[in-house]
Image (spheres, rainbow, N blue to C red):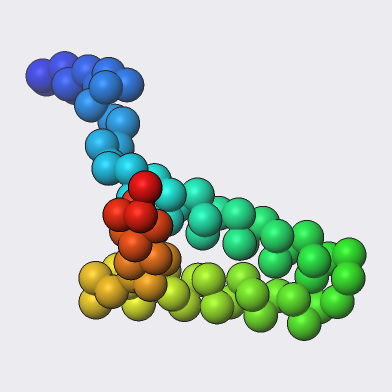
Length: 78
């Protein structure tokens, strides 16, 4: 029986550009902020989490990501 191929951390790492990393960071921040606000302030803040999830899902299928467009405009200013 052949041995399983070894995987290294370099083959597992996701290679992304800066705008993708910024979008992922923003999405994670929005989700965690929405969870915290929903837990400590009002359950209505869980809608922020639902909106972020829906935006991530639609961008996976359509390729349209509003935060990436905004980050691109800010990057062109400097």
